Image (cartoon, rainbow, N blue to C red):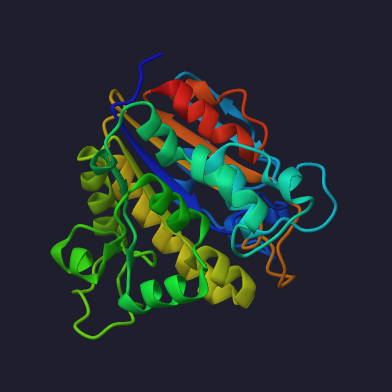
Length: 306
């Protein structure tokens, strides 16, 4: 099994594997509608609970448990800490918590998050990237209220730079909505297509050892319970992933994709779900993820695949 030179980690907020719909009707699960890039990543099937596992040296598609056997709905704070840190954050806190990592979890997340692990193994922070841009108001709010998300907290702990609107305008950041149409500041960047956003993610990936991208519009669409909005988000996601995969080299690059909890796959409720979440590994080193079963298994497998 080849070790990857470059890793693209796509974190989709709020995406689970829900029930299929009879006769292909989308029903309450927008993932039932056919989309080529998503289906290819799941071995030709829609992203539902009935999708069969794919376990090969170069391609893994598996369901991951996001509950850790604890009652209550999984939440972003503990779920993201578990996914990005590779440890049972739910056990440390004593339950599910969100949207931000709770205080008892932060010391472990600071030490064990994927960026910190790379740095501890000898990588320079400049070799690691968080592709998302952030407006100036985000930094003011986060610093004033101490409300760093699991992703931004991990970057700060490892010395990985947070990108800004200037990076987005220069073409050195990926908008979380894939089009930059939601950018909140004046002097917005030119609009882009989701395919071009995927190609930009691939370019950033090839310039770094590990690149993380967080897509939060999936979770927002799930909470909105709007089928048309959910469909547009997934169409854009499909095009983004198509552009990203097309520009990665499976012989040297690894695409890693997962989520923190279910939500978007069940538009009949406004809350998160108990559904398993997808794990996808494609390319060099993918076979290292064949034994993953929970959110906490992803980062340890990533470290072992280097």
